[in-house]
Length: 509
Image (tube, rainbow, N blue to C red; front, side, top):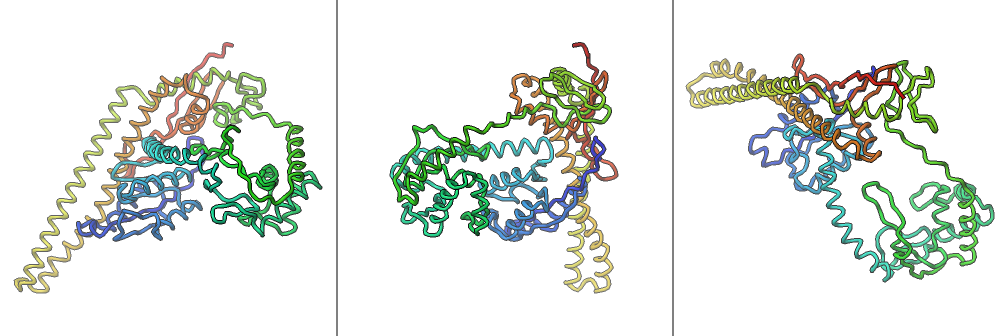
């Protein structure tokens, strides 16, 4: 259950097993890695729905492997929302592919869990890992982009391809643009229909009705029609180097006109027809009143009245207001209360130290149990080997060997099942401890920088760590997310709990 009383659906995850031939020669069992990952998922209350096996596969390049493709397909269609593996080197040894995996998972809002490195991107520390990986990938892209960007204007002035598909109605042939015999007539018809009907949606509807489709087989839309009407390539003037892509925001912007490059190509419509359509488009745009941009208030969607209704900032109002009972709180007051709660993100220093000591003691105890189990397993394997050697030398009968081997085999199987469970419990404790420390550090840092952060960054922080804000008549109750406790209950790690705090506030003003 969340702090707001809504039951969470079980998180569905996959397990990634990649053990190379060299790893297997060193005695690393795929079964052991799978048991450990399953035990971790069970401890977190997750459901394992898929296992992806790349046994005896080198980590030099795995992105093209059939199992990797299957995993990414499951990720994109929502069948899994996380992937658990024993360590990063098991996911990929190739840094470029590791960055690609991270980017794909981040874009899908899914989590990566590396047990060895204590990385769980469903936790604060794990999200920091995502941020660092994304920063590395961004730096690499920017380095490449700078080199490519420097060559773009030169290639554009020479009329050479600079990337991207040819405009609709044209095709690249021998590195030159020429009219496409199939698409060019459709583009001519598009301009003629617009000149006749003067409505982009009507043009799109008529093209679709007559069976025409875009290059990728999609229906024409008014947006597509608008873009083609404004592209001067159709009248014989191909425009290049006029946009740049913002890789961080995944969109593009128009460069200054001084940087645009035009090259003459074979026209498919008359300049007169193109100009007539362009003037109509410009006239229609000038007459359209764009809707005012909606302001996004910091706590919109998170602020609730204690009567249960959401609270919003009405137009021209400096307060969050409940439409049901008219309870209200000034915007500035609520932000001040929220910042104060960030400052008191957890509990007193003494209690923090006590939690840390308890976490360390719990981890030490698990480590001792693991060491003991590993030692016992080695002893049993040695004793079993001795019995086998005696049997092979004829010093033990088949019956005597069976009596000695059976209990050792049973105990060995029990320990081989127990070890992954113990290691998974230790993984949960380690990741929880790291996550908790990271959350504390982030909170302390945020309180010092809060006033200087832009609105967009503050909103991202609110979305990342806030579950609910309940505003009463004289106090504000804030529930923050992802504050895992480093403890266990009944052999399983306790689920992350929200941190709830109530703060009184003064209604004056």
